[in-house]
Length: 374
Ligand code: GLY
Ligand code: MN
Ligand code: MN
Picture (cartoon, rainbow, N blue to C red):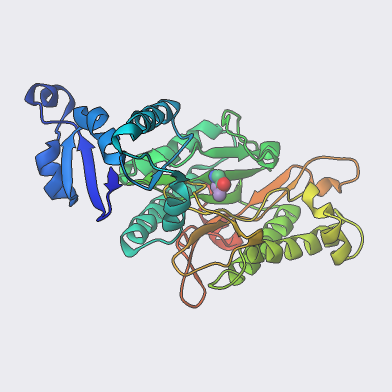
């Protein structure tokens, strides 16, 4: 699709109708129907792209496209530009300014309209159901990939086309490996299971993490860490709203987590010292969220003029604090191999935020009531 000219016109280049090819590959609109259905000013056969583009670029002051997204496309755009430049002697000028169109498109992607939100809510609902299914199917002795299969089955049976990213189904010590996704271990009695899984529906991603005990009952130390991460998430969600800095939810989560680490004997010293020196990063080494939308880690800047940007109504992001405690001599043994993350998808509203994945069980009681109960 191209938007060109002094009086901007939208032009679409698409495949022509071809009954033989449609028999093999499926329906094509063709330019005529595409113009009506997609509401563009004009549509042309894709075969005319090479010939028409240099003409369309002539005498235009600027060109916007996405450099570096595709090497072959870059080469074509440069060839068209050079074809226009070669016409300078007949009075046709080439665009002087070349802009990255992503600076415009990424900003547009950050704020969702009602149609986008309706899809994102449905995607969130499907992913919530998949987590419930996974909780019910969990028991000691089963394999992580059996639970992965339950997630994928639930996504697809509700119409989601893909997982938004490959699910992390991490039991025991693997819950402390942030990008674990071998998903091939047997789930052992006494360990935790951390699942990070979300579906993609009609182009939009969802992204949920829950952590639960494989045998359906949190141990004392597991519960302590779980409740700590839950409190950190609640603080981060409370700090999410219009006008708040992008960093505010992260700062809120870090304060709660760092205090917990001191209370559990994982970090030493005052709260301010543990935060300022970054000691907490040994057990919480990632940030608390990211933009969510067409991609799971969606496009869009996090800083403007080198400062964290303010949140705005209609933005969607994740809130996903965690705490990951590997076995080590200087760590109390009761906490070894406890890895917990709790992740929800959040919409910034006029006066705060809405957790669109709220149907996914999260309290200790709600989780214990489900795990292992098919
Ligand atoms: N599932 C990727 C993430 O949580 O960022
Ligand atoms: Mn995420
Ligand atoms: Mn995730």
